[in-house]
Image 1 (tube, rainbow, N blue to C red):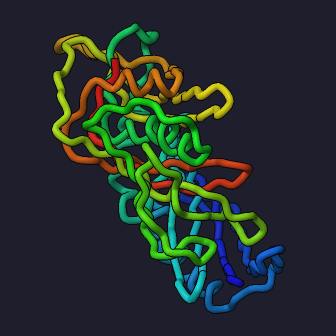
Image 2 (spheres, helix red, strand yellow; image 1 turned 60 degrees about the horizontal axis):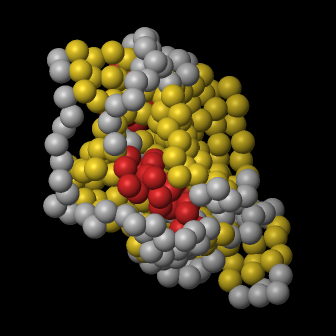
Length: 306
C-alpha cells in the first residue's frame, strides 16, 4: 500500500498582471486492487506550495510583454517530498516551458525569435536541430515509442537517449531509475494529479552523442524552436511542429514559415546523419498522454538529419 499526496498552485499572468489563480490538493491511496482518492488537503504541502509560488511571482511579473502560466507543485510519496516550479511563457504565437532559474535567459531567446517575421516556405534541405531542439524529435521517436513498447529500429551507434529522473522515487513510491529509451521503457510511474492513475512516463530525456560524425552542410535548415510533437503508435509515425527555423545558404539566412516534420520512426533513425557537442538544455516539453499533462526535461546535442 502506498500514499500519494499533492498540492498545486496554478496562476495565469498577462503582461505582468495576475488575473487568475487556482489551488488544488488531494491524496490517493493505492490498496493494490483499488485506488482510493480524496481532495483532503495536507496543510504542510499547501504551505510549501504557496511559498514556492511566492518565490516565482517576482520573476513572472517581469514579463510585461508575455502571457505566463506559473505552476508550483509539491508532492509527497513514501516520505519523499518533491517540489517543482514551471512557467509556460507565450508571446506572438510562440511559447516555451521554463523554470524560475532559467526563465530570464529563455524568455530573452523567445523575445528575440518573436521579433522576426517568417518569410519563405520550407525547401527540401538537411536539417540542423539547434539549441537542444532535437530532444523534441527524440522525445517522440524514442521516448513515446518506448512508453508504448514499440518494435526496435536501427538507431546510429553514436546515439544514446536516456530517461534520467531528477527525483529519487516515482509517483507510486518505487525507486526512480535511469533507462535506455532506445531499448527500454521508462521506469517511472507518473500522475498529473491525485485523481489520475499513474502511468509509465518520461521524466527527463537526455540525448547524447559519442564520437558522431558531423559536417555542417553549406545549405541547410536550422531549427530553433518546436511548437509540439506527437507519436502515433498504430502507424509508428512521428511528427514535430517546427515554430521557428531558418534556411541558411552560405552567409545568407531567411526565416521560414512554420512547418511540420513528419516521418516514420525507422525513417527518423535513418535520417540521423551526425551530431556535435554536449547535450544542451531545451526549454522543456509539456507532454500529454491519456489526458495527463506533465513537464518533461529535454536535453540534446546539435543533431543533423538528412
